[in-house]
Length: 168
Image (cartoon, rainbow, N blue to C red):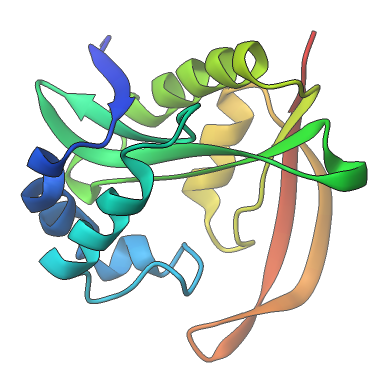
């Protein structure tokens, strides 16, 4: 089933949907501690105020039928890592398993390789986030590394995986 999603800039009109969908422990548990839980309207306002005027855009709303249902971003690195960019994402639990995230990743890959002077895009899911690993593999990413029990999240040490795809 093909979804008609788009990636677009975050707008102030997205504050309510961002707060509604991001306020979910099942999302926050797979993201860095910089992603708050609970996620409030104030958190949504603060986030949108930071990212809405980026140029070029790095953080996009995943838009489904005119509503922001998640976020995906591409973050170019610096110094000796400058030919690389990290990708991060989350999607409303309501839309999990519907093929939306692989489509969003395809769109951000096209954008990232076209917009930035990079040759590699990587993502760092936690070892216990099997759904994210499958999404990355479906999108053509390869597992490059696994670091055992290196990250501390929710009171426990978890594995960090590095998946990457290179520009053809």
